[in-house]
Image (cartoon, rainbow, N blue to C red; front, side, top):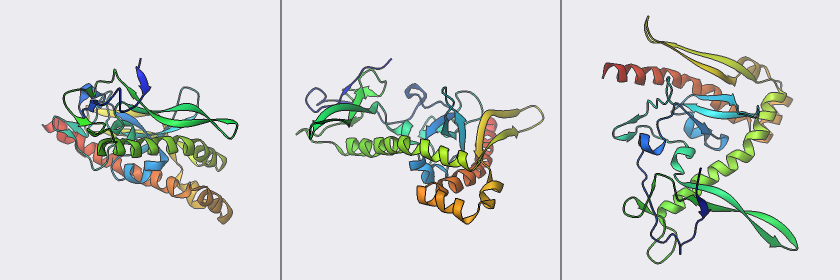
Length: 241
């Protein structure tokens, strides 16, 4: 359960947010939701996979670990990667919608909401949300950018997967990792881009993907699987330690 309310600089003037990454803040996860709007940054660090949500629709996830609740990028000092996915950086904030009348029509306007029961919320430590005079702090400006990545990513995901599906570009993938004779890990129920089908597309199909803004996303997702080797390296390093 959350205690989400509309953020404002009167009721929340002294609000602070703890920004470090640790298990108590929900960072010990082996997969995290990511969005096409951040594929370029994500694919430099993590494998991007597709899996179906509870309604059967595809969504993108970054693979962070090989076991349940294992984030191989997280240690006692924080999150060790050049990019942390937007969902893990947004902290206690989310986009909510407020009804607003404009020109005789009711429009839903996106507004920043905050979960006051989130473990990152503090009044004594962390980054201030507002400046002393009431303006947005640099941290809140950063959060606004992160939420925009998520909000726009949600809007893009459905059409992107529809375009991939129409061209039969999504295939199941068996992510099986053998560390030694005793340790084997399997990541079930995941999919990826079918690189052979992508390479075989004709000009018209490629143009449709490109005009929709999805061609680059397909190549980025496919290329990201090379990061599985980094997960193996991090796992072996942790075992040795």
